[in-house]
Image 1: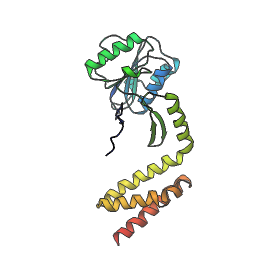
Image 2: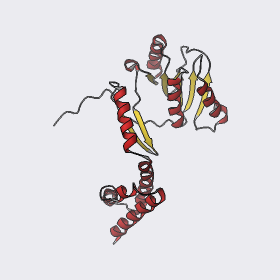
Image 3: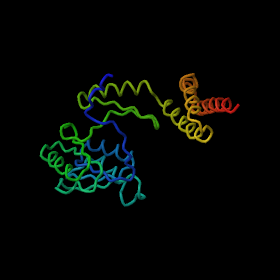
Image 4: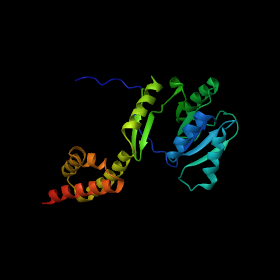
Length: 232
């Protein structure tokens, strides 16, 4: 049996809705990380003596004291990093460009148990970020494990050209059908056969060429036909 190649990282998706995350740094790189965290529903705190104007505007739109509990929020603290700042956070980004601050964050993260990403310094990271292309709930992620960010950027661009909005819409409908199938088809073998047919025998490919509502109706019709056959 062939031994699988050794990975430097474990691929995983994290649920961050309502969880506290910290970003050290207030520049444009930090801003992009903060946008991603807010999209994931995180409660974000930023510590930095200077903030780019876009970040100040983002904080106004996501003020922590104006957001319902458990939803994305943003709080800015205008000062440099200080020891102890990492306590109580689940995920931390250091985007300062300052090696001394980055190494201090690394040491503190090891004691606090938080996961740390130091931007562009893989040897100080617990995790790294893949290049992401998203269409609805469908996520395409590419990672070279820190070896070639430019290559992963190119691959992401190719994914963007290949997989457009229709794929996100089809994924949404397939999610609806999956939930319905749990009610209609208690036998897992029947469920697998229905979805094998939808994906491999034409309905999904056909739906990708149709306008949104027609695509939805087409997939539901194909599903109903298959489940009707299962019942007879």
